[in-house]
Image (cartoon, rainbow, N blue to C red; front, side, top):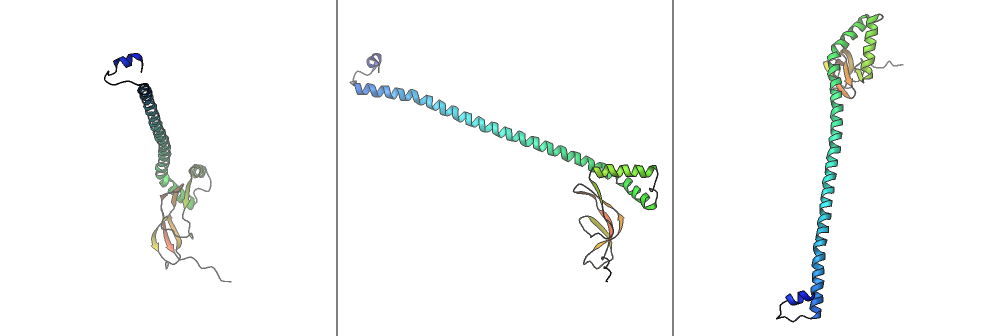
Length: 183
């Protein structure tokens, strides 16, 4: 304590040198304590704001990832809608090919170009006679076999797959496999 503090102190209590040193130490501790509290409060605020920033950055990264996925899904959905609209045309071209109308000429060139474009977009035809019957891919309209090892007999409508997704199931008859000739 300073001399002014000693004069202001209660006169009834005698002031000793030890009391003065303890009072100074207590004042120093009290002065240091709020600064320590302020520092720990500031550190807590920095930690809290850092956590909030990290959460916001994670949310933004998730938003960007979801947006990119949704954009890819929208593109895939658009391709699927277009292919579904083109399926009747592809069926007509297949019938014309089976009839022999696509052997030569401009219609053959058109059919080949359309097939190449759709193949480049990962459109795949499936269901050929003799293939193993798969109920996930093929729609059976008639069963002429025993059912032990079913295979496709006749194909009434080919199926199409765009990438990994089935666009249209094949309409087929199911039969037993043709036994291999014995030697």
